Length: 308
Image (cartoon, rainbow, N blue to C red; front, side, top):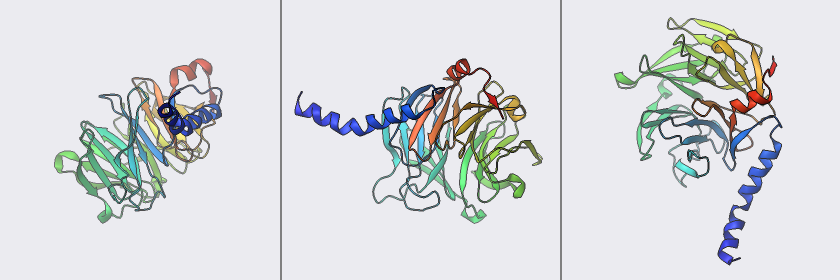
């Protein structure tokens, strides 16, 4: 073997070992299309519906620290090629501090960053605009959701007990959509495809829906540290519990019983659902991995699951 080949093997050995170890730690019932490691406090992962690429937000430090360490990773559609620092993360840069929620919107990548939202050209990586929410008292911006029927982007502020609205057609006008203790520390958010209402999962363990008159309805309670939420396009929600390391399926857009479909995970954060590949995309906050879990295979192995 040439010395060059030996150096390549040695350089990649830590990553290979980490991937193998993570795979062995997953529960026997889990079926992963791919697992990648070496992320630095990954909080959110989304898939681009146009080209199939994955984007991952890396806090890389404390979630509220304005330290300039944050960055966005990009994974190829095959899951084989990783650009670790696709946007941000350069030494001496303050482009991103603690990026969390992600939204691919047409040719743009929206990123929440503590008290601002950064909007990038997803191809050129150019920073197109910064939406500053500090005048509103934003504390901990988290997830993003787009309502195409209204041309509005919503963003949750978990510590501020608020949800903001951003009207794209009105020069990205920002307003407080809803605030108050009844939001229960809102974390992951999405638009219910059926009712067109905003749905949120809360850190205190509830699933709530907010209608266009801004009335809050509790769909589910008694869960623990809910983080991410998305739907499968067939009427079911997938929701992650950060502390319990579980992902639940809840039918009828949150009105059915909660079934545990994946367990044994390490701090699953802001998950999303790839409706084309039928996979849950899972960033592991504390173990530094990103995993895609097949819903088809999980159903075959455990058709009924366990209800809670």
